[in-house]
Length: 500
Image (cartoon, rainbow, N blue to C red):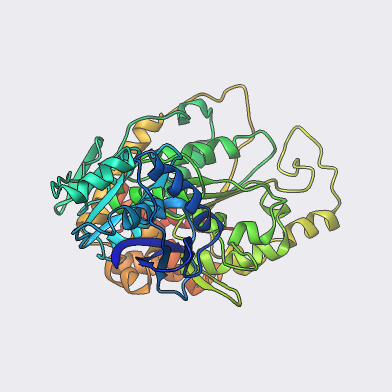
């Protein structure tokens, strides 16, 4: 009996699967057991065709492939090569050892990449359960970015057989990401200075651009409110390209999410941006599914941006369900057959009009809404939900005097400065995602600045969550100016962005 290591993706985490094979005297047959789905069962025909190209003759015996553990559901065509090797080398004195084997077979024996290979190997690497791997040559560029993996590749089944049969095993080491980076406390953070959408295209709106810069520097949630066409979406879409540098773990996580979502994988240090339409259903936003819990937009936006345009027009159930991912940075999807927790540490951006017709703040256009319509429109957003948004920006009206004032490159340099300040302090999380202990440790006020905050608490009836958010924003503004201490000016500016 031969035993080869492979793995399957159980919702979002990889589980090791041992491929066992046996040949017994019985009527000739070929069966695969162990809760294998259709794509795995179909591999029998691919294996027969691929082995026939090597002139392999199936013995007049019953061949049984068992996938252990047998109570774990398996899926994916990446098991093909491990099945074929266990059959082709059944009578050879070959030891597979701790080498994991992945790859789909073509009918001519070609070994192909699949969308599941990269996320499975990445998950196993995070669990420190994998060291050596044999994969299709097509998969090398992706898998080679994962640190700590020794990689061997093959283009054809014959190469995979020779790899074990000839015992000439050569492995390649992982490759570093070729990109600009900052090195802080011995750790690299990658970035690129490419701005397909640039803030220089946004004319006027100085307050909004300043607030956008603060949001990017500390990953603070932000709400833009203004008349139609004033530049809310323009600012939101440009924020993605000035966000802080990314660690290798974040880049790989982005690639994993893209792979699971069947999107093209790139290893560029550009954070994800998800922008669901306001008619999207609750399961599509938060994840769901009757048989197993699938990822929704909030999980796919992890480490990036989740943008809700036309904020009040989303379903009430969607809006209220946002509270947990915005506050706890995670969402738990529970089903009868599965329970899974996803990380939701994203920068939330919302954009809305001030009223249903959009002209409430306009000095040139007349608002057609009644007071009742305006109140109903505003009541769609509850106080607990709005309390989870850090920065509130009321956009200016567009005028002929508006001019460009700052570029995305200039803004990104400030973001880098603030990012370096936060990491050199020893923060694990950026300012916008700090917990209460970190706030007490890093957001210290002197006596005069504390007095200003106390007055604001009394005057504006701030909640504890609101106080924490003001402290975090003030800390970010101080970091942008390379200030070790939070000054009065930093706190006053932070207070100016509170929701009125």
